[in-house]
Image (cartoon, rainbow, N blue to C red; front, side, top):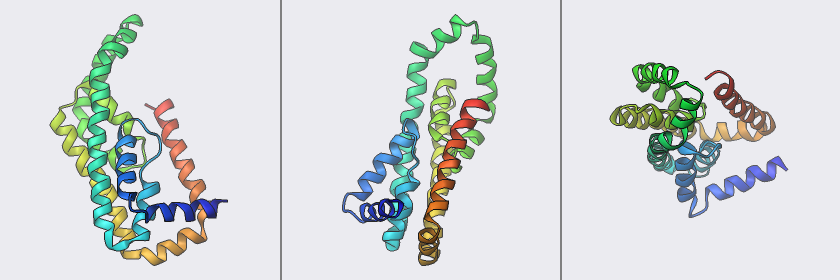
Length: 193
């Protein structure tokens, strides 16, 4: 079954609307969707290595714009939803301290989360909630997301056939590792942050 899903994903990656699907997933993942765009980025580059830079560019642009949507969610919904809850529990002072610390390191937090498998939507929304400088957020977001997606594309472009053989030979292990990392990111959000 896993092999059929992999073959289906490779087929989807070669579809004429694959770039649009990648853009939608990249946008949504940066603001509210839990699955990272890598699940489509990787097979798209493997299916058409000559389009690796275009695929990475679309993924980066859509992710950065999606990050702005996540920022807007945090910025505009905090006053109507988040602030009354914090006031009810008398936690506004603690939040003010958190906000100062977050904004001191905001560019690094955004850049770190944008490059890693950490659930990026948490950072985009938190950046809006804390009112992180929008220019700082946008630059850090675009650079880190671009670095991540272009690095993946470059590695797949350069090592394409070998990586494809490795993926196909270790599909079950890689799928398990991906889901463990994804779950670990969500657990980190829940229990560490």
